[in-house]
Amino acid sequence: MRAAIMHAPGDVRVEDRDRPALQQPTDAVIKLVAACVCGSDLWPYRGADTLNEPRTMGHEYVGIVEETGADVKSVKPGQFVVGSFFASDNTCEICRSGYQSGCVHRQGVGGAQAEYLRVPLADGTLVATPEMPDAGKVPSLLAASDVLGTGWFAAKAAEVGPGKTVAVVGDGAVGLLGVLAAQQMGAERIIAMSRHADRQALAREFGATDIVEERGEAGVQKIRELTGGLGAHSVIEAVGTQESMLQAIHATRAGGHVGFVGVSHDVALPGRDLFYSHVHLHGGPAPVRQYLPELIDLILRGDINPEKVFDLELPLEQAAEAYRAMDERRAIKVLLRP
Image (cartoon, rainbow, N blue to C red):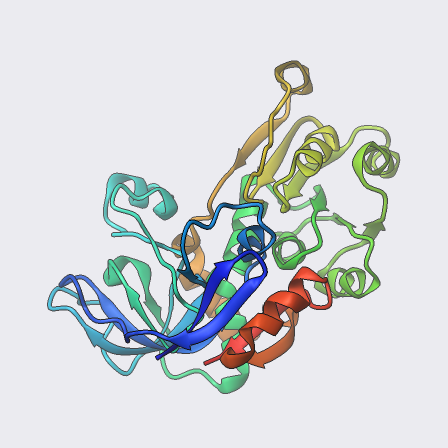
């Protein structure tokens, strides 16, 4: 099969690899219908994450089940499925509390920028659609496998709800879908922090009521100006840098909540700032599996259209260009077709 392999920072190639096979009776192998490049894939691409050896890339996926292990009961060959980037059994105590990404048996799912993918713990990881979806729904269902589920979790972690003002730090796909999630959860006011006209326009389409272009402390002051000096009730942090995390915390009112889902890189939080802020912090890897049934239903009913974050579509063979386009901010998110 063909698969995207990262050999070194800035070096992505599409090469032949062995087609994955069942290794455990709880595995499934799926034929991928669509995959994509994630913002977190850019960390090793830019050299910010160590890459010790060539790596098959990709962790966002939808596809059709090809074969299943003997113990798999919830999905069967021929079904269209959506999965998450952490495999989980969905039965342990942590999973039952809604944190499948913290499953005691969790395994990372990688190698989705390819033609086929082995998914461990298939019963607890994959969710089948009621029937084969229309082709037009595939990009939205793909978004549900990570960026939509992650934006949704960020909004939940930030305690977004009716009557609240929400600020979103980060205008990538996760931040933009955090805007969409906040709108769906009834937020009264949604402030998107963005300097890019195309992303600002999409944020407004998803439900943003205000745009703030300033960053850092200037951005914090702007949020406070818009909220009577108090700060936002809920802040979504979708970047993962020191500046973005401090911007999120400082833009939150006393007693407010920060939902942080940006993969943290060299973030160190000043204890005294936290102590006097009265800000609640909650986040981490999104338990996407918790939300998949609800998100799939919303997508298939046409209530939400997260596919709009995909502003470029390329064949898998052009994966290197997909990475370049996102790295150079010529694309928000690139969908790949195997």
